[in-house]
Image 1 (cartoon, rainbow, N blue to C red):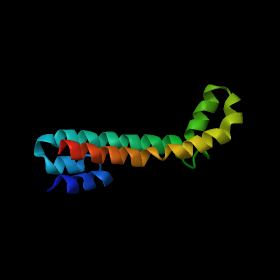
Image 2: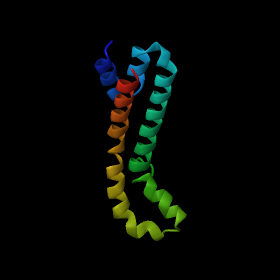
Image 3: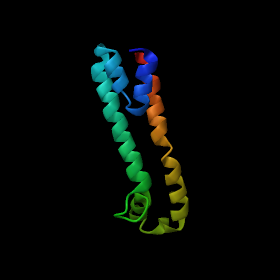
Image 4: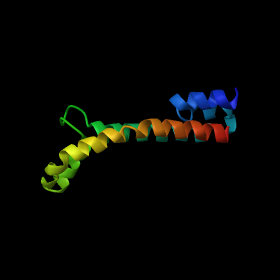
Length: 103
């Protein structure tokens, strides 16, 4: 498998292309995959929060920490949380670049 194909695989599944291309880097590829999935989940949880709280989780966390003073900034937090979702593609691009350089 070429470096380009491995990087393309890692664009969608970070680290998997590295593990498939270079057997010596299998453990590194698995570690990159686990780290990327963890970061994706953390960004999604903080940015979206889910329906169980009705909005961004980061707003609820900050509201509890500041005793409600943060409620004035809720619209700003929502906008920043939406931009936080841009981190997910960034993590995948970095994973693909890592595979291309290490593969």
